[in-house]
Image 1 (cartoon, rainbow, N blue to C red):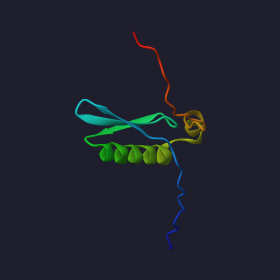
Image 2 (cartoon, helix red, strand yellow):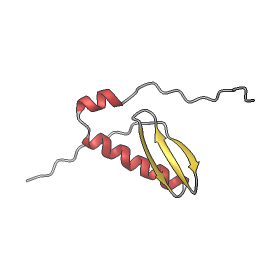
Image 3 (spheres, helix red, strand yellow):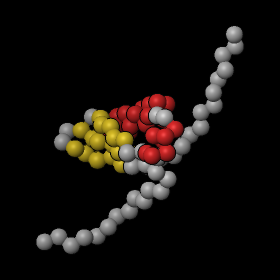
Amino acid sequence: MKKIKTMKHLKQLTCIIERENNGFVSLCPQVDIASQGDSVEEARKNLVEAIELFFEMASPQELLARVYSEIYVTQIEVAIG
């Protein structure tokens, strides 16, 4: 029996990485998934893995509820003190 390969397509998502204590935390706000790692690259790699697993395992209903199409990342200025 011939094995059928499924075509995977790539989707660009936003990744925010910040230092936390001795490691780094990565967040994808479009799917509200976070991960972590000892370096920026490890946190990024772990986030990609977590998101790919989410897309592989999530039901169509969960995808509709959790995938946000519009995310805006910007800087703001606030008064302190």
